[in-house]
Length: 467
Image (cartoon, rainbow, N blue to C red):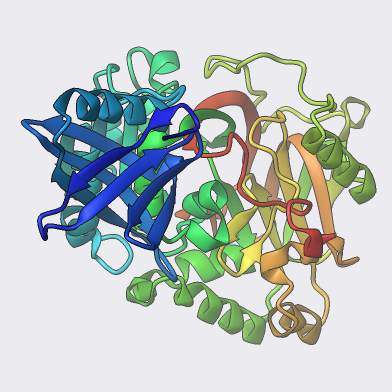
C-alpha cells in the first residue's frame, strides 16, 4: 500500500511495538494499532537510517507551543527503509536547502536572561536534529553584535539571533559597516524570541507562534529569505540603520523609560503605557513628511490589491544603496516635492514597518515588507479615556487604532523631526538617542529576514475580524 507516492514502512519500536509510517506531500502519518498521528510535512526536520535503525525527528504541536519529538525503530527491509527515509527528506525539504550553516548570536542578558538555557535545552537540539552546522557566539557587551556582523564570513545561510529586537538592530548596523555590505545584507536574519517585546518574531510568525522559540527554530530551518525595507536614521554626524521603528513621546517613554523592568518581559510595556497616560505629556515637535499616501481607505485598498497578487504603487527605485545621497537637515524641503508639515499637539509619533511593535499593539497594520515606504502613525493629544479604551476594548492587537480619527497615518518615503524641547529622547529600534533634529529615509529592499510565509504573518486584512 502507498500513501500518495510514498511506500509504507513498518518498524519495531524500542518497546517492541509495531509502527507503520507513511507520508504524502503534505502529511507524515504515524500509526500504532488503531491510533494514528498526522504531522504536517513542514514540521518534519530529519529522517536518518543506519544499520537497520530509523530515526524520524519532527516538531509536535502541543496546546501552546511546539516541541521536538522523535520516532525510532528497527526495520527489517533495509533497502526499503533507506529509500523511504531519503524520500521523506526530499518531501520535507522540497525547495528548501537542507543542513543549513548557521551563525548563532546569543545575548545571555536580554529580556528575562534565559537565552542561554533556551538555546541549550530547546533550540540547539532542534538544529542538531535537522543536521545544521552551528557557529555559536555569546555576546558580552553593548554593540558586540555590530563588531561580529561587521567581520562576518559571508558563507552562512542564516544569521540566528537569540535576544530581543535590539540585537537584530546591532547585527544590521554591523552589516552596514561590512567590507562587502551589499552581500552581507543578503544573509537572512532569523530571530529566536528571548527578549521583551520580540516584535520581529511576532511579525514573522504571528501572535500564536511569535513567542514560541521552537516555531522560530523551525523558521530558521525551513523558512525562506524575505526582502524588507530598511531606514537610514541621520542625526548630526550619527547615521544608523533602523529596521523596525522610531518613536517619540509616549511610545519612546514606554520603551526606554521601562528599561530597568526588563525582567517583567513584555508586561513592562503595558505598565509603561499606563504610566505615560497618567503623565499625558505632549510631544512638542515639528514633523515634516514626504507623503506618498495619507488616505486610509486608499492605503487599505492597496493592501487588498497586494493580497490579491495585483500590482500596487510603490517606490520605483530598485534595491537601495547605503551610498545614496540623503539631503542634510540644513537643507529646506519643498512642499512641491510632496512634503507636508505637521505641528499639531501630539501624544506620540511612531514610524516604521512590521504590523506589531508589541503583542498588545499592532501599530502598523497596513505595513508591507518591501513597498518602499515607511509607515508613520501620529497620535493627537486627545483625552486620556480615549486612549485608555484601546486597552479596555482590546483594539490594540487587532490594528483598529488605525481607523481612529485622532490617529493620522501616512505612507512616506522620508520624514524629519525638529524637537521644540531637549527633554526626552527618540528611540530607534528600542535604542535611545538624544531628542535632537533628525531625519529618516527609506532604503528599499536592502534587508533580508527569514520568513515561513514570504509576508508578514498578520495585518489588517489577514483576519476577517479585523475588517
